Image 1 (cartoon, rainbow, N blue to C red):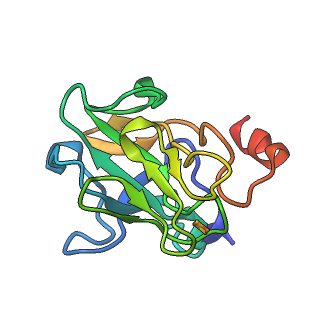
Image 2 (image 1 turned 90 degrees about the vertical axis):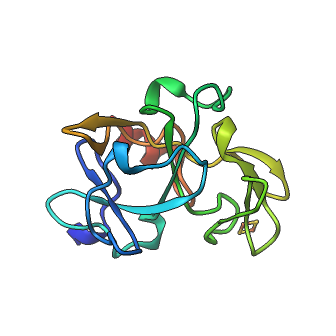
Length: 161
Ligand code: FES
C-alpha cells in the first residue's frame, strides 16, 4: 500500500513521536546537539506502515560531520539515515557518546561519519538519505546513497533511478 512505500524525492520528514508527532520537521527547530530524532517520510500519505521506513536524524554543529558522510546531502548540519540496522533489521539506539548501538547483536555505527560501522556484525554502513530544505522543512532530495536493510542492489538501483 502507499503507506508502505519507501521514501521518495519530495517526501516531507515528519516527527515519529513526541509532542510534535506527525508535524513536518523544520530545520530551525532542531538543536545542533547531535541527539537522535526519529521521523517518517510523508508523501501523499504518511509512510509509517513499514518499519523499514523509520528514519533517524541528527543535527551537528559546524565541522562535526566528517567523511565518509555525504555533506552535500545534508542541510545545515542535519544528516538523515534509515534507522534500521543493516545486519538483521533491528532499530538502533543512541549511546551517551553519540554513537549508535543495535540492541540485537551489538552492531555499532558512527552517525557523524556517514553511518560507518564501528563494531559488530553489520555488513555495511547505515544508508544515508539525502535531504534538502524546502520552505524551512526537511524534504527527501533523492533515494538512499546505498541499499537500506534488506534491499537488494537491483531494487536499490530501481528506487534510486
Ligand atoms: Fe543489528 Fe544484528 S540486527 S547487530
